[in-house]
Length: 231
Image 1: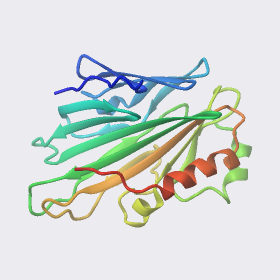
Image 2 (image 1 turned 60 degrees about the horizontal axis):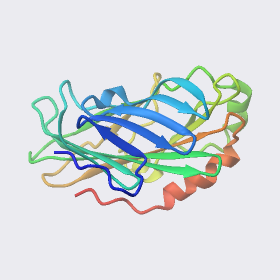
Image 3 (image 1 turned 135 degrees about the horizontal axis):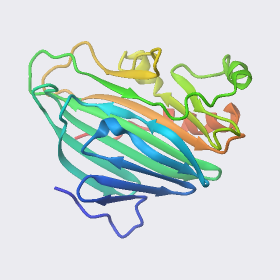
Image 4 (image 1 turned 180 degrees about the vertical axis):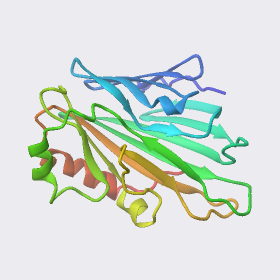
């Protein structure tokens, strides 16, 4: 079931139940909700196209999209449990235009009817990962929040993209540190029946000359925000 976009100019436009177009400030992108592993792709910022994708979410081999809708700044997709991934999964993307960029957030929540489970889902990003100035990266190392990184930044990319996990989820082992391929693992060692497990990510799409000082105020606002409702 898919609700139509409200007349309040949602940045998300859903076509054919699952193909989504994003238009927010200077940022445009696409998503295929039937294939969350394709991520937020075809990203274009201020006329600059960026290769790769942001937040490729793995929900087993054949995720079953049960419901999708746009509600204001939010895009919501709900997936039924499958044999390979026996969890009801809810993904919520939120987009907000900033003075000099765009803020995207992703909230992943899982719930199960089983008694003893250990849900794990992967979230990977390969958004221009090779387009990072090494000197700038090293200069930021001491002040970079735990679980944060630049996906791309500099003139070659035409854009800067800062990504971070919520520190509360990191401390609760819901989002593990990045692996060698930039893949995050969201989950928990034990999930009780009926309990909702959440993980949150933020991405800031900014001009190529952005510095960590430009990203941190928006990151701190993300950290201070209340956990969205997931029922």
